[in-house]
Image (cartoon, rainbow, N blue to C red):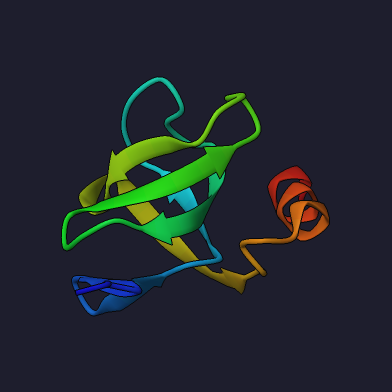
Length: 81
């Protein structure tokens, strides 16, 4: 079974969604969800990290913006805003 979205409260986390990290070293930084792994974890990319990271969806605050998760140009543009 492949999960492509996850609800956090009333908000759905989906691939390509721009979020703000709430906890950890990257708290307050923008990130983009590139893969939904299961009911609890997603894979994100951020400006400060070189590699994609696995994070708990409860540690993300989703924003209204969504980009294509396969387009590096759109991801870079979303993270630099």
